[in-house]
Image 1 (tube, helix red, strand yellow):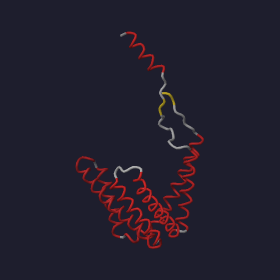
Image 2 (cartoon, helix red, strand yellow; image 1 turned 45 degrees about the horizontal axis):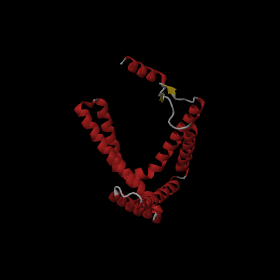
Image 3 (cartoon, rainbow, N blue to C red; image 1 turned 120 degrees about the horizontal axis):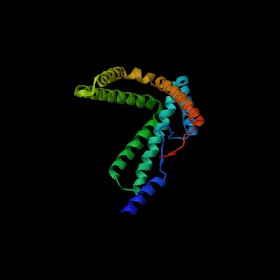
Image 4 (cartoon, rainbow, N blue to C red; image 1 turned 90 degrees about the horizontal axis):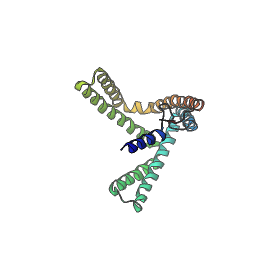
Length: 199
């Protein structure tokens, strides 16, 4: 019994275990830099050529849905698990992709419009959930967030066409701000490398 406990103690103390420090980056700095540059360029294009850039993005989205739908159907030859869902999503992806590629200009408005409606409905749902949580003891913070979400969702749903027309500019500013933050963050990560330390 004595030897066994000593052996366990020695094993625990002599075997170093690696742990991730709280400030350790998940991605390498150069990957964050590339992501920041791409996001910044995309934001600039969205502000400079808003609807042309949106047309290109929606066309790429259509091509992605079409290819992913085909891959989902072809994957059934190898793996037949969840075959029903794979067939459903595969067919929907192919139909949506073909529709976008066949009518790119029309889709450049319809796809963002559907996205705006989805955001508005989602905002209403989350707003009412936050209000319900506030009444159940979640505090004033949850109630204020719920009210703001409901107001935001109502503004979107009351003017979905106007919101859709403003979407490229909103995404452009988000792209510029997010891209600059990512670039600055990558420079900081390069200058302050973090390494895993033994626990």
